[in-house]
Length: 268
Length: 313
Image (cartoon, rainbow over all chains, first blue to last red; front, top):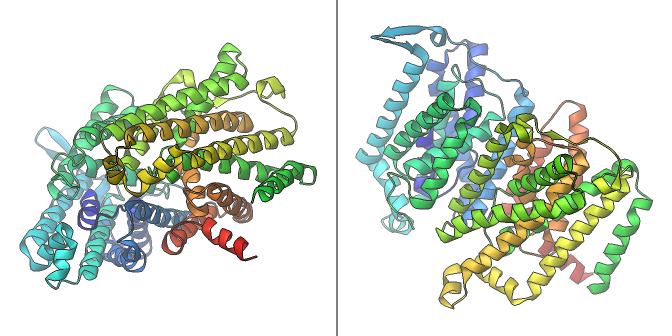
């Protein structure tokens, strides 16, 4: 999911505070599809991604597009507004109780040599890698992907060579949101969720993106691993409730000494 | 303009005589959130450094005063200044790191959020501070303990805080300091080129803002009689603090007050109205929608519009 955020930020320099809430909507969509239509989240994540793609496009077209030129602060506030609306609509629609999607896969474990591996986690991990790879292929090997990167590098330049920058932005925002939608559906059997999960998910993904490096897919991936390892180690060696302390301390250190992140090129 | 201000203060002074107890509560919240917004306004509005971690200062101020009173018997009337000083210390640390390392815009926002979250996690894990459950203050009704039987006392304290903060902001606005702050917001690089010590002025703004916010922490603690790490250090309280000046008009003297007069009753009413039918969170949707529309249609907030209406009349 950090991959989606990094795409949105990297391309548009727009800070999507609604990221975690979009993910929660992906989770609830997976829940809905599972209970009403009996679709396993490992199948329905494609649908969730599509739905979130539409939501992302709509947000971009209807709201963000009007203020792309405005100072950063205004965009932060705008996305904060979107986040508040999304989170609390979810609260109204689904109630505050934690929910979880049942999937037969989630209960299974496999023995892999000396390790027991959760099948659900394994599948999620593999799909995450495949999605990241597919996204980087798209960005680096196709014309459309190159256009997105061009618009990210120099938005006037892309405009001059005849690219429809607005459409590129909408596509990038949509793809970013689709990534979160897919991620939401994929983790919904593993992670119990409720509307307020969105906020902490947003914060976590910001950690990951900053630590890994803005606008770098590899950075987002490594950052994700780093944050989860730091948190798990923290939980093992100290108290579980202290685990977030590690990722936040890491964030502060990175912000101060290497604000572009571990893998980011220096912006500004 | 001057007599209009005096009239407004006079009305506010007289109001408790005619208000019902529920309306009084709403007004206390209006004044208190107006005060917090005004304190934020110094650094967020005038200087343009968007701090999204101001809840941390409320928390530090409140916890300090509450602990000093329960452990050492120090009256919160003095404790509130100790708490505010500690909050200002924290503000200085955050400001020093953020400004010295040149974090601007979004990076500064994240730094403030990260600090507030670190405070929240630390406080929830220290048992001496009540852990995740927080602190509870026993009610004695003793004015020396910052506790009052009569709601009106809280009203006047909140009003005094709001007037204090507004006075400070008015003073800053009129002096060279205020002009420097606005100049930093508009174009920091140009400001530096002209030889203004931007670091110093940003630090001063941050310290003043966190000191005032820390004072508010004591009021918060002794008005609600409880402090929970997730509420006083949490992101939602920071949002509450930021949203009022933004809606009212950040970087204007009366913006935060106006914002609080618009938003607080709206929030209370929708909480009351929707909360009864079990629809929690409706007031936050109202916040979200208002925030989106202000950003899109009134990027300078509601205050300039209101002022224009007054001019015409």
